[in-house]
Image (cartoon, rainbow, N blue to C red; front, side):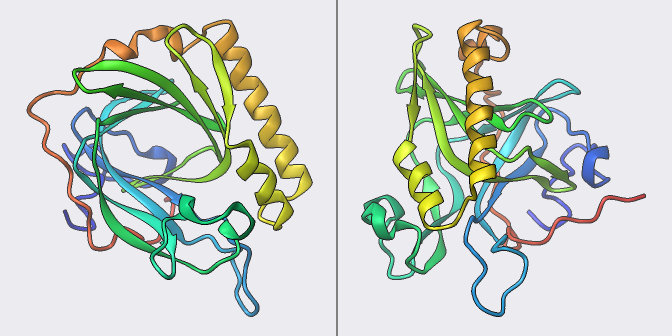
Length: 242
């Protein structure tokens, strides 16, 4: 996949920014910028891409973007500079030690990601082997920005797991607190993130969309191939045309 191929698919992603509309089967990139504080002499707030996942578009409407990340997809993820897995590092130093990125495969079941425009979260669906539905996962994040090749966001540490019986629980509250302690998130941002989480909980409790929409019964088109990871996976988004 070349720089131009990364969001064009059937020809529907020729533009950039919010004017992009993709068709089922198009291949795009689902990316997250890092949360690092700027180091001395740096500008931009540590906003380099550190997670990149090639995905296939399931649906793209004014109400919902749905994408499929297939098992075996080659992705980019962060690790510590010495190769240590991020979650293997003690919490006290997890966000202060130097990091780099590596390419790796997404093994296990694929993941369906659902995002409504403007929502400060996306909802992911996980299955076990044999398409046994496991859970919904609410990933609190910056509302996604569109560009010709995909969508970009920034993770907000705090998450919510939703079980098939509609019960739910907060996840990663320790990481959310640690991110604030080390200065990756200020008090005002943390308050907004918690409020976003409570808004998501309200949707869960009344079983609103997308939880009530039957996506757990969805299956990918068997003709879809696993999208490749492009060499320029971290390229800057093309500017939105006037």
